[in-house]
Every structure is written in C-alpha cells, then in structure tokens.
Image 1 (tube, rainbow, N blue to C red):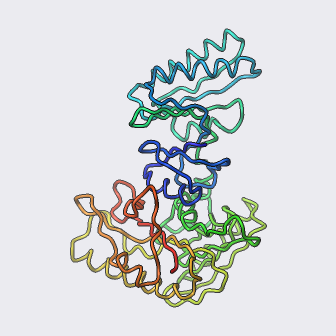
Image 2 (image 1 turned 60 degrees about the vertical axis):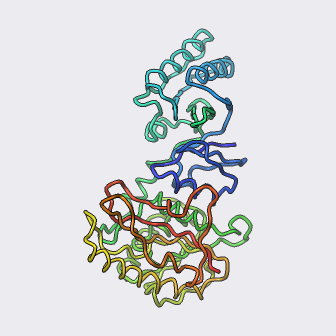
Image 3 (image 1 turned 180 degrees about the vertical axis):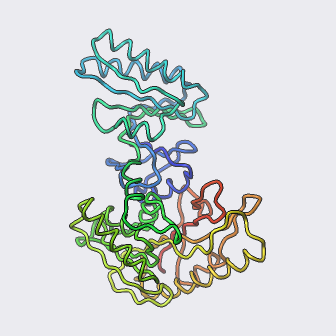
Length: 392
C-alpha cells in the first residue's frame, strides 16, 4: 500500500488517482491511500510525493510517532555501510520544524554510537517542500530516504518511506525549454496536461496490443500531445490555426530528440473543432477547449453573459460534432472555462446541464464531487473546469 501527498487542489489529484488506480481512499485532507503493488509518481500530475506505507498507528501524537520512528530505524540501519541521507516530513501535526529536527537528531546520535553515518536534511517547515525532496534525490535509492509521517484528523498516523517526489526539474524543462511557446493562446502546465490525460484513461489502457491514441482537438502549442507521448500513447492533434500546428510539430520534434519517444507516433492537422472530421482510431480525448478572453478582475454581469454565451456556443458545437465520431464508451476530459465572482463562487457554462442531451455522461467519482474539479490559482478569474465524460 502507498500514500500519496496531493497538490494545492487535492480533489484533482484524488480524481486522477481514482481513475488510474481505482482502489483509493482519502486519508487526510491532502493525502490518499492507494491499494496497489506498483506506484509511479512520474506519470501523475496531481501527486507531489508518494511513499510505501511501513507502519500505521491507530492513534498518535508526534511524541508517539517520533519514538516509533527512532526505534524502528535505529534497528533497521544498525549495520548499514556508507552515509545515509535522511529527510523527515510531518503532515497534520501541530508541531514546529524544531520538533521534527529533534527527532532526526536523536536518530542520528543513536546511529552514531553504532558507527552509522547519517546526514540530516534541515527542516524549514515541518514537511520538506517538493523542491528539497527532489533536489536531494530522496526516495530514489536505499541510502537517500525521506520518511513521511502523516496524521489524519481522527488521530490515525501513517509512516511511509518515500518513493520519490514530483520531478519539478523535468516538468519545468518541458514547459520552458520547448522551442515554441505562445502566451497569447495560454500555456497549459505539463502537470495539468498529465492529469487531464490520466482522467481520460481508456479502460483498455493495459490490455490493448497496439499503442492507444489520444486526440486533442484544440492542441495549441502541443502540451497535451507532448505529455500523451511521454505517457506511452500515440498523439493526434488538431487546431484551427496553421501556426499552432507548425508550433506543435516543432515542439514534438524537439521532444523526440530530447526524450527518446521513438516508439510512439503523432498526427497533426489544421482543422476547426466545430466541423472537423477526425480519422480513427480515437481511444480517448483530452483537451483544453476555448476559454474565452482572460480577465484580471471579475467581469461585469453583461460582459460575463457575452463571454459565457460565446464559449458555450463554441464548446457545444464541438461536442455536437465530435460525439457521433466517437465509439460508445470513449472517455473524454475536456477543460472548459468557469468564472470566479467577487464572492469567490464560480459561474459555470450552461452546457454542463445538457451533457446527456449532447450524448455524454459525466463520470461519477467515489471520492470527489464533479464541481470540485476546478484548476485555478487563487488570483485567477478564469478557472479551468475539467469535465470527465464518457460517450453514451
């Protein structure tokens, strides 16, 4: 069993885990327990850290958890040769970074008496941030360890050995070093693209003999096709703009040179998502559709009505066009706009209430509500609402 520590918007990470792994349950507000034999953080956009569960306490404060941790790892590492690098991260405890550091120092002193050398990563907060875990390569080898100590609201505690943190260096590289970028069309973060592809995971993802193909009908500069190729899919991208298709082609050629994706193919074509005729196979659809104009402050009611109506018209026409071209059961994840009001509530597209008439059913998650599937920074007016659908 594994525990996953989720990102700033945990509902999105939880939905992704549920779609990929199935047997998933909340443990705390920002963590989930996954019943699985294998777990790869590299393929997940919404998980910041993950660890293999090594101990659970039915109830425990930091002192109890700390004592158990020190005893267990003094015994486990008593005969280890070579230096161990250790980070300790606590979640859900009402303690200070000094308390966490003290636990590490006690363990270090006990191991020193046994001639075992331990380097301790200092805690600025009670949990190491993702960057500290990643840059120190914690969880990636037997002598670079991060212990995740997570407490739920009911007092239950999980101790896990990290199997790695989100590779922020690789994500930044794929975002910033691509040769063609265009701020005007908006830039989809690679980790959100990963999440969207995973939310559109086809049921036959592990069984089919051929590589499955993901369609992005609004491909822009090609972030979703890029991430699809890295997740072992073939990619199919279309866009209204010839310029965007040229940008995507350049970016995917760069990806092929830098990331060795030779076994996977892509197809690109300039086409209007409202009228396009796509070629088969289409095993899944993942896209960020038309989001309308950006806003730095909530728009006036009349402006919102105008923009919302325009977006609704375009995206409805897209869904009406693509529906008959998909086989029954085909999964989709479509990013659509939702607008933040001054009271922090969101205004949604009218089409969300007519998805059944358009020929789609919304996926029902066991652990999250569909209205929680919103991706936005705190200061962002136009959020991305993720519609996880299935063709009827």
